Image 1 (spheres, rainbow, N blue to C red):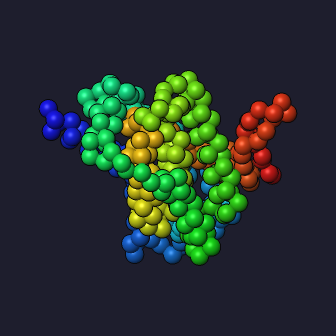
Image 2: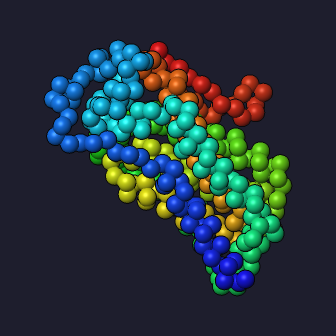
Image 3: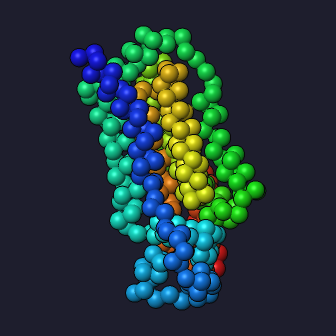
Length: 297
């Protein structure tokens, strides 16, 4: 029985790292010699007049470095279909549901390997573990996000729209995390309040997912590195006795869901419409926090 619990623990932590990567995995378009020169020379003006009936076939046929309106090159076929409902279901709702569901299943003493079991193992093997690294580690992907903007031409959006998408994703994550903390009202393993879900982990996966979306076409290792940092943040929250395992699993799901939702809505609202939309946190006239939408024509 003890061996089974240990194996379950390892599988749950593996789920945090592997599931987001699998959810974001893409099929890279072919780059063989069969791509015609005329197709590679398509201009953004021509592409903007593609009819809806032929858009899908043209997207699939377009080379990886085709420039589309409002976007930077190169682009994968999957990135050009960000607003499709089926892709949103596959890459956002299902991974988020799995992670949040795992968090709910293992909450407190529930589940085959519960959050209490994970806490007991932590106290048994590393009772004095303590570090502040997790308070800063999840910001690292933001640093190389803007570093890539400075030294690479392969970012997906310009820096202004990237920043807007980052702020909007963070605002949505906050809108889910903080009310959930108040509603669940679960104490942390160290006795402090508002445990579920983990805010550090949610923001870590928010940042990692956004970096993945902006640069996964540049190198798969960018995505792997971002999610590894996010996963390490979550693990350190448990090792520091700051959070239960369930908090971390649910936080990862919230971060993934938030970014994918923002990109999904952004694609539906702004793609090929000459719009530059930014969603950002704001303060309402009554002094309460809110979210503002800015659309530039």
